Image (cartoon, rainbow, N blue to C red; front, side, top):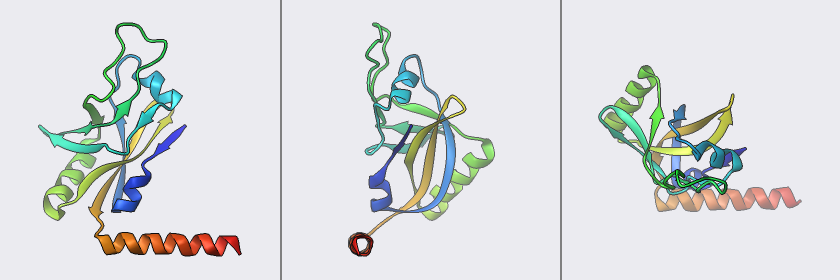
Length: 141
């Protein structure tokens, strides 16, 4: 099971990718395994030297009880100190944005691939559309 953020690759140039763990509670991991998750509008914010993912939607678990989780709460990301320092420096120095690229299960744990990205201008997006259309035409031949 793997959920990709297709919008991220269209709107940003991805300069670096880092794998991070996610702190999930209760029924959230069951919903992630089921695939009822949306990261297209999510972003990562740094607070108190820790990274948090904001606006990631994890649907409520169907068989959950009254202790079900809140669908779009802030969730802490687990990064090593070395990785965290690297991310902080690039965000401050180069003005990069941190965005989620994909979420997947690895060894029974939910992992999030985050990208250090630079935003595309409108003409870059047009070029991406043109390149994609040309590739589609070539595949049809």
